Image (cartoon, rainbow, N blue to C red; front, side, top):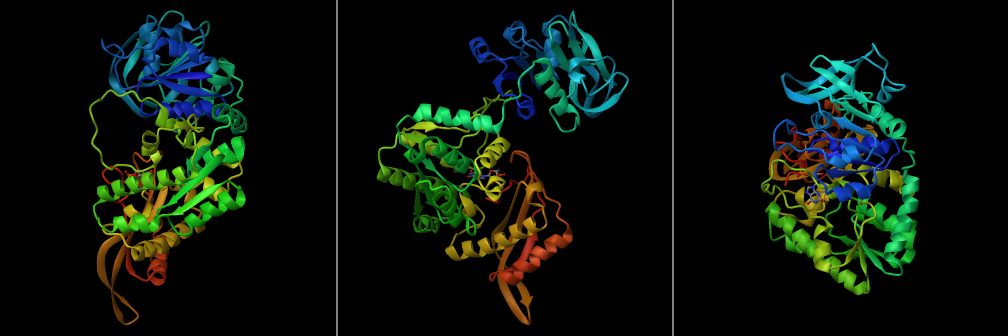
Length: 512
Ligand code: XMP
């Protein structure tokens, strides 16, 4: 087990990803976590993350003493390296030249981190992002690599097995970075590398059995990856003590509801309540055009219907949720203050408080791509495992303005064509999310010799790593042309197609 202490870097989660890719379990704690928590985690190695502060400033975050006193290997990255230096007797100052972006690292001496990777005399590309720099090493350390603006770009104390790098090995712009982190956790720390999804599956099944005993569990299915994987895993552990509830709000994409039912009832034979509540949802949604009100209405109705179904089942002790690790990590915030609500998210988040049930959250330790891996391990079909994210309120926020069944059906057809063409072009996995949006605007067109006056469909496709920022996907023009022709020809009600080229920020991914 590796402990990552977070100083608030944007990319701390990537360190965790790299450690786990090396087959070693790790967790992230804030730099100021209580000493007991650090000790009781019993790390075999510690990684200090980067961060935005300057270590020589009085109130700057310091690494906890335990990090250096446990006697385990330590790797400091960027701010983490500066913390090692400042706290163990070296010195850090503001640099005159800041170093951001690609830099060339010159290897000076052999080092355990570089084993099988880099040799003295070689130069390698790394990613730098720092204003401060180390000017004096603590006793016991030597310099093993330099860069133009960082004379102590990599440092080592072999005796104490402590290492520091000024660059960021966790980002892809340091091409050998993942292997460097692997060297640290596998060679220096000597961790086994037995964190695999097959092993996780076994442990998770045992843990679920221990937690649930003879109790009964209900699980809300949305058709998405997380709830599906959670349900299949829990079913493997406790069989028919699990009942799934699928609240169908009538806002899913073409064929989706049928697929959920077929997969769970047909393929896995998991007890499933399929409640078609589309009339209820569409009835209430007819009363509003306002995005926030739509979201709130859907959130409220979802909880009502779910509760009703849960009551019918009766006697459930546990509620299963597909909570993932990124939702669990305590974030280190230096900005503080309340943030503005851009969109109120609807997912099953409101349920636990209302229902006062104990939670079963078997995916709490996993990142999204690990959940996908586990899904494969459990035999979920590939199309389910690699699915793009889909918002809880579904197509309600993609039919802009007022919602009717007719509009939803028009949108479903256009959306299905867009996604089908993306699949055919082999682009699905290069895209974070792709979908059609139906605009409440009619424009004039000509088809055959007749005038048309129909709705506009906007296409949206973005790349992103976490949905927080995004860029529009650069489709070839002929691809967009093909999709546009198909949609206008095949979908009655749409006579014009536009492509959204807004990044996030300033746009958001969804239009409402
Ligand atoms: P925005 O539109 O805010 O979306 O850029 C960021 C990501 O969140 C998804 N999204 C939602 N997911 N419930 C969800 O579960 C919601 O209410 C919701 N609204 C947006 C969106 O699809 C994108 O992936």
